[in-house]
Image (cartoon, helix red, strand yellow):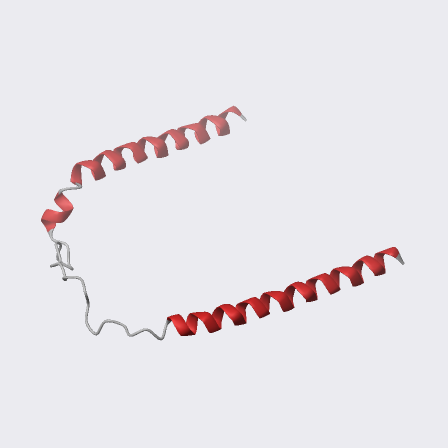
Length: 94
């Protein structure tokens, strides 16, 4: 019986919370409609900047990162080799 009362009380609390939340959302929505009725600027108010980089990268764009890419590949290869050696050692020990 105590479980049923607790369940009913929980449902009542959730229902009251839902009603209050939807009521608050309705009041907030009505206030935002009034605030959005202000006239907006007809054009962009900030000057447009030119695009600094082209849409399609060139070989020179990739060349800037070649050294970092080479170092990353060397480091990743060492990790891969180390993992393979560890697996071989574990398999041979068994």
